[in-house]
Amino acid sequence: MAESLSWWTCSECRYTLQAQTPPEVCPSCGKKCEFYESTCYTPECGGPGNPDPQLVSRPKQPTR
Image (cartoon, rainbow, N blue to C red):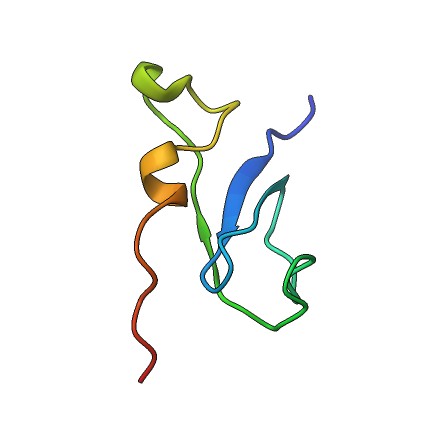
């Protein structure tokens, strides 16, 4: 049985990709960024095969 892939979004540039785990370095901005899971889990956004548009477009968290 194949594992389902999650959607991950870069906290810096908002690059979104589908993978089992987030990458160490963002393929888009080339930085070592934090990734958050942005998989959709409700029918309104298409279910687990899709990224959740509200999570993908959420505002950047301020750096401390």
